[in-house]
Image (tube, rainbow, N blue to C red; front, side):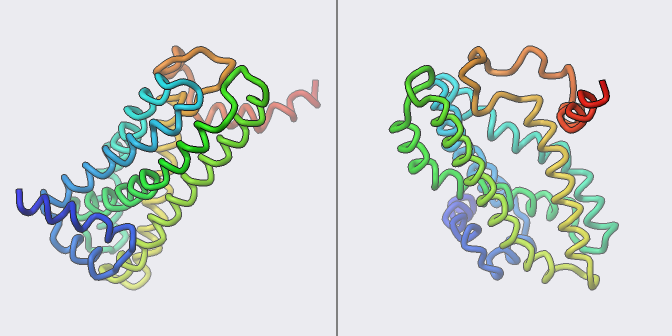
Length: 238
């Protein structure tokens, strides 16, 4: 219990990106640190998820408060073994448990940053026109842009501050950029698909309020993206 409390107290240091703290955590991937990161993802993700879906409806906010941490954990679960193998093959010297902690640390930083910004975003949502009212279309675009900006900022910040530590612990020269690129690409690839399966997150006013769309497994995110890219081309050739 003492170790868990100590790890929880050190969580803000992850967002500060202090290399000595991050490296110390990687060198000693204890259960208390894994649990502390999981708690940060659960609480920070739930807080921001509530804000993300609240404009559409309070119930939608509750749905997303469950789904956003679930999205992160599913991405970690899907990529955990692959990232561990890539870390060893590409010469980082990190074991499977260290790799899992590294991923947890990155996502915990993301969740803490978004969670810290959730009160500000929530105030914007409360002051915005409600769905179906005057100015709702502009509010939808502006709030969506705000959330995209927050998520992008949190993601870039969380990963950028972790990269110097990965470079410091890597056993082979040049291993850090290879491992970092492989992890980032894998997480983006898998995360995009899981977010597609678990949609909606923000919620379009014209569509019914649902926890998950009925056609959640009918296609993939990449099929949808390909259709959007090729649609204008197909229209021109007809």
